[in-house]
Amino acid sequence: MRKSILITGGAGFIGSQVVRLFVNKYPDYTIVNYDKLTYAGNLENLRDVENKPNYHFVKGDILDVELALKTVQKFNIDGIIHLAAESHVDRSIHNPDEFAVTNIIGTIRLLKAAQTAWNDNYDGKMFYHISTDEVYGSISTGYFTETTSLDPRSPYSASKASSDHFVLAFNNTYGLPAMISRCSNNYGPYHFPEKLIPLMINNMVNNKPLPVYGKGENIRDWLYVEDHARAIDAIFHKGKAGEIYNIGGNNEWTNIDVVKLLCRIVDKKLGREEGTSAKLITFVKDRPGHDLRYAIDPGKTISETGWRPETAFEDGIEKTVDWYLNNENWLKNVTSGAYLQYYNTMYANR
Ligand code: NAD
Ligand code: DAU
Image (tube, rainbow, N blue to C red):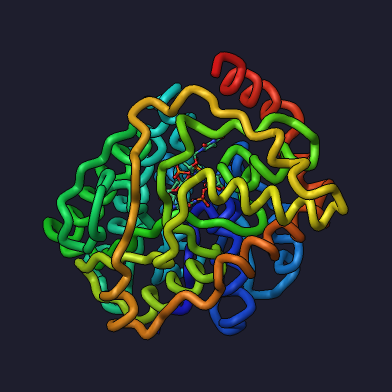
C-alpha cells in the first residue's frame, strides 16, 4: 500500500481537489503538495486542509531536480501524482516554449527524481501522470479510446502528448512503474477565470462582453472536478503500471449552449431579467487551430476501477455558479494585477 504521496501542482484547480480528497479521506497517508505557485497556483484553494497533520506544502519547481529528489527522499514518497503543468491552450499559442519547458522537461526531471530516489527498488512505487484528452486531437464522430492514435494539434496538447510518451518510455526502458490518465474538460470551484466557464461567469457578473470563439459550435465533454479527483483516487489505488485510463463525463455540449445555460442561471441568481446576460454574448475571432470536438470513452476506467461520474451537469454548473457568486474575493484576487494585463492582450484584437 502506497502511503506517502507527492502531488505536484496541488495548488491548482484540479490538484487542490485531489489534495483535499486525499488529505480528508486518508488521514494515515502523508500528503505532500509540491507546487511552484505560478499565476495558476494559489494556496487560498487549500485553506480548509492546510492545518491537517497529514498535509505538507513544499514550494518547488518540477524543473528543480535536486529539490524534487530531496523532497521524495525526505518524505519517503512511494507514490507520485503529477499534475503540475502549464494548462491553458490560448497561452500555449502565444508562448509555446514555456509549455515545452514545464510540461516536457519538467516531467522528465520529475521522472528522473523518482528514478534516482527509488533506485531500482520499485516495489510498491507508482508514478501517476495526469494527462488530457486533447492529446488525441479532434474527433468528428465516435469516441477516443486508450488505443486512439495521438494527434495533438495545439502547442499545449503537443507538450502533454510528449510528456505522456516520456512517462511510458521511462516505464518501458527503465522499468519505472508509471501510468497515465487522460481526462476531458473539468469545471467547478477554484477554476482559474481564463478558462471558458469561470471567465463567462466573471464577465457576466461584471457586465463585460462574453467572448465566444468562432461560432461557438465547438464541443467539449464536461466533467465536474470532484468527479475527476475521485477517478484519480480510484486509478491511483487500482491502476496498473504501463496502462492508460480515459476519464470523461459522457456530457457533450457546444460552447454556445454552455454560455447560454450560464446566462440563464446567473440572471436567475442575480435577480436579473431573463435575457440580460445573453445580450453580452459576443462572437469573436476563433482560436487558431481550434479543435472542433473532444469526446472520450471512459469505459475501461469504469470497468476496471468501479469509478463513475456522479454529478449531473445541471447540478454541477449550478454549484459552480453559486461558488463564484459566494467567493467574490477569491475571484478579485486572482483577476487583479497580471491577469488583467493577460486579459486585455488576449481579447483586445479579437
Ligand atoms: P492549473 O493551471 O489550474 O494548475 C497548474 C498547477 O501547476 C498550478 O498550481 C501551478 O502553480 C503548478 N505548476 C506549474 N508549473 C509548475 C512547475 N514548474 N513546478 C511546480 N508546479 C508548477 O491546471 P489544472 O487545470 O488544475 O490542470 C492540472 C493538470 O491536469 C494538468 O497537467 C493538465 O494538463 C491536466 N488536465 C486538465 C484538465 C482541465 O480541464 N483543466 C483536463 C484534463 C487534464
Ligand atoms: O480537454 C481537456 C482540456 O480542457 C485540458 O487539458 C486543458 O488544460 C483545459 O484548459 C481545457 O482546454 P480547452 O481549450 O478545451 O478549455 P477552455 O476553457 O480554454 O476552452 C473551452 C472551449 O471554449 C474551447 O472550445 C474554446 C472556447 N472558449 C474559451 C475561452 C477561454 C471561448 O469560446 N471563449 C473563451 O473566452
